[in-house]
Each structure stands twice: as C-alpha cells, then as structure tokens.
Image (cartoon, rainbow over all chains, first blue to last red; front, side, top):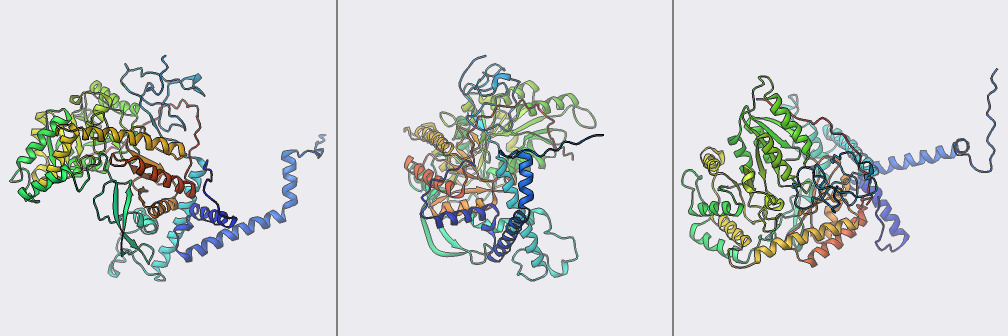
Length: 85
Length: 554
C-alpha cells in the first residue's frame, strides 16, 4: 500500500488509536457487535502471546538458523564437511 | 510502426499510465518493457481517438487481507447462526415457521448467509431516504439504529445539502425549477399524472408519438419506441426479438435486465470475456462453423448484447471492433446505452457518436431516459420494420402502462435542450461541462493514489475499496463529511472487488468537486485506501485461453 499518512497526528495516542482502527478495519472487528469484538481481541492477543512466547523460548534456535542461512559477518561457518568413506 | 501517444493497439487495448492490465492481450513485443510504444490498430485504424482504459491489478497484500476479513466475518457468521438456532440469541431475520422446520430449508444457501451475517452489519450505507430533488446536492433524512442495523428509526433531523456523488444525474436535468419543470407542470395540469392504459389500448398519447419522433431524430435512426420502465425495456423486448434456435453472445458483465431478457427468450446464451474482442470473435467463429449443438444446423440469428458504459466498471465498449466483427460474421448488435446516452459524444448522442460511427450500423439501439434526461423509462431505436414489429409483439407494449405525461414532457424538453432546439446553448454546455468534470475528477483521484477502474471518458468512476469493513466505514465517514456516495459490494461485484462508485454530473461545479475530492483524500488517508502502485509493469504476452461459455438450452 503506497498511502502516505498526511493527516495531522495530534499525539502518539492519536497515532496508536489510528493503528488500532486500521487493525479493526482489516480484521473486520469494526463491523462486529461489542461482545464479538471481545472474542476477536482475545483471540488476537492469545495468538500474539503465543508467538512471543515461542520467540522467547526458541530464541537461541532461531538465531542459529538465521546464522546458518544468512552467514552473519564475524562468524566463521561451522565446518560441516562430511567425511565419506 | 507509428508512435502516437495513447493510441489503440492491435486489439484496441491500450497501455495505461500505470498499473498492470488485467485483460489485455498483446502481440509479442520484446522491446515493450519500460518503453511506451503505441501502435495504430492493425485493422485499418478503427479508432479515431485514443482509447484509454485501465484496470489496475489488485495488490497481493490487499487481496490476502480481504480474504482474512471475509474469513473472520464468516466464522462469526457461523457462530451467530449457531446461537440463533439454539435460541441463545434473538432471531431478527426471516425463518421458516415452527411447523416447517423439518421441510427443505429455505434460508441455508450462501446468499441468505451473506445477507444476514455480512450485509446486515453495513446495511446503513444503502436505502438512505432522500427528501429533495437529487441534483448536485440533496437532503437526506437522518436515521439511527439501536439494534445493529436490524431496524432503523428516524431522528427527525434532515441532513441538508449533502453533495450527491451517487445519482445518475449526468447532465444535471434533475431539477425542481427551470424550463423542464415548468413544461412538465403545464402538461401535468392538462393531462394529469396517470395514463390508465397500455400503449396498445387507450394509452397512446400524442405526447408519446412526439417523443418517439424526437428520439429517432436525436439518435439518427429511422424510428423509435418508448417504454415506461428501463429494466422492462430490456427484459421484455429481447424475448420478442430472439427465441429458441437463436444464439445470444452476451458480455460477462452485462446488466441484470439484459441477462433476464436473454434467459426469458429461451435462446442459447454464450458469454464472452468483458470487452475482449478475441473472445467474442472466437465465439462467433465457433457458432458459424459448428452451428447449433446437436443438429448442426445454422443458427437462426446471432445477437450480440453489449452495453455502452458498464456501470460497475466504468468501461466503454469497443464499439468499432464489435461492429467490424458483426459485419464480418453477419450477426446483429443490441447496444444498451443506459449510461452512455447523453453522457458521451461531443453533442451527447451516445457511444456511437463518441467513436464517430454510423448509427445505422447498430441494429438495435436501446437506452433509458432515467440517467441523462432526468425522466423515467426506456426506448429502443432502429429500422422502421423492427420498431413496427416491436409495437405489436413486445410484451411491454401490450401489457405495461405507458409513460406518464409529465415525465414525457420532461424528457422532450431535456432532449430538445441537449440538441439545441430550444434556442440556447445550455445543452451543449452541459455536455461539455460533464466531459470536463469527468476528466478532472478522474485525473485528481488517480493522482491521489486510488485505484480507479475504467475508461478516461466515462462519468462512472469506481474507486476500489476491497475490504468489507472499509465498505461500511467509507460510506459512513463520507456521510459524516456531508458527501453521499454509493458503495457496492457482493453480489453486484465479485466478492473481493468491492468499490465505491462515483457518478460525476454536469451540475457539479468545480468548487463542489474540489470539496468532494478534499474529503475523499482525507477519508482515503484515514482508511488507507490509496492502493495504487503507479508502476509501469512490462506487459506479459498472455496467450489467449479458452473462453468460458454457458449454454442454456431449452
């Protein structure tokens, strides 16, 4: 989406409210009844919590995988030469 | 190879200023990437003016998010249906009676599911009651809903001077003051409002004969006939023209009245891709070569159904090519000019004049008086034998009440005004103002970054919105800013391609358009609707694939 935000942002709270509103528009939370919104928000929050917990638990594993695939500078690649007999 | 800005390519499809084309077929041009080489049409320069039509492709992220939104709404729809069935929640919509619960369910199909779970949530954007003449500005009655759009109540307040971007008031003849209104008032005091009969019995007024002669002169055809309702003109006259053993080739995006008329006639219907001349030619070739399905006999008649301007896409039919194909394969052409009459062409004579063609080439020219003339009803124009036949055999002529006299006078006055026969240049100025307004409005919207479909010259401007929540939000936000717009979703459009449709009018002054554009800009930023990527994508040489056609026999 190439839209630039040219509207006047009065404060960071306005900006966060606008972000919340975008989230509501995209997931159609804007159209739902209040009790349905509660269900939707709790679902979203639980998904986010689980994602962050996974990132926290497997942080080490994720870093290693990234290093393997991206060859982060300053790390010598592990010698993974298979010795064939 | 000539280089001319914006000229048509071999198939009449031109490269737009930005965005990828959706249904264009390009003969292989290896050097096309990055440069804009335009060719005059190979088929003898059919187009005398540039044909700029573009349908920018849906951005992938937007499509995915649209599906996400519809997925969420569907899940909540199932939840609500479950709660309603088990009586945990009160059921507002129509259901079967208790005794009929074991019968075949009536409301389980997708249309009903969509209506009660998706449409109801955004229903306040439609059926808004207006209480003044729908000119450039209109008054609306305010209504609120306390049970989430199941019922509405009027607050008693009238929202005054809402800028009207939704009415089909192309030339601005929807007025409650002026020459049209005075003439109509005089006729009302002489003839009354009701006709109380059909055309064939006692409902044939001298006003109707005058109107028909005037319409024939306006269009440049031999004869014309007027009917009381535009929808009925299509649906009741196509069955009179074709029947079993005939073939109808209908555009993919034709209006419901054309589809209904085609189905009622009992002819075989085949559908070609929207505005795609290769698809149409392939169908014509197949029809001529193979004939009718089982017996292989030649078709009695082949009728091509197209519209002048397609109101949901804002695209204009490729009429020069359709006429060339029609002549080559000896078929008939039915042109529905509901939106294009009065709105296109240097003197407002419609899409035939816009392309500089001969009206005698189009066999049946149909149109409506609702849009540009501020009246009601429809007409069919063509050769004298055709119209004489229709006077006798059309269902609408035999059974439907004829046009009401004040409406006829409104149409006659507005048509004379457009033709310049009332002695002023007011009509001509209206037509020019509409063309200017259209170009200005479209240009500004494209510059702002919205995805706008359709042809540069079409006064119907669809602005793509895509996501379901944004449809409702757009309608409501625009009304808060005192602008009335029409938003369109499923089933009038494909389910992911919902849009807001603006109808530019000659009655809009530049100030009104500027106000509207400013508000649209603001709402576009607020809702993040500016999806256009303004990118020149090299055209792929997409080979033409099998056309889809639907055969309905018997």
